[in-house]
Image 1 (tube, helix red, strand yellow):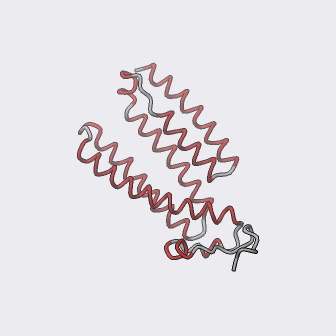
Image 2 (cartoon, one colour):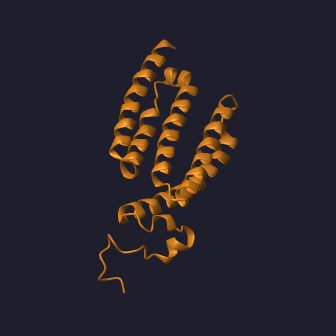
Image 3 (tube, rainbow, N blue to C red):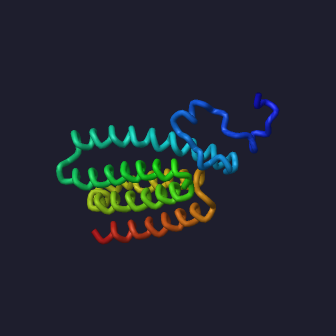
Length: 168
């Protein structure tokens, strides 16, 4: 019952994923898009849980001078994840991926800008490690054009960070 079907044209067979994530909009989509949409859905659910925990940790342990910036970034990312979950359920896979890539790039830049005086003094730059996560996300879920755009944005952002850091 399904062993002789071609996996590319076969309908989604997982009752567990259908129970929680009903990709009715993806029934006519290629197999790869259906699997990417399912993976992205579960990744978003996991990230929402992790970000809520991180929000609690930041509330308890953050330096009061940096707390508002951290709360703003954490809440904005949680809202983007929730919006992405709704977009994904509506069948807007590419819009969800674009939303996540743009929001991750913007939030990482705001976080780096908020911590730029500290980064200039300590010499530690977490910007590059976080941007590799954006590149990985874009390479798994995005198109080639999105990946090239993210790579160009990272190059420009690193050059700007260097010059802004030198001026402090």
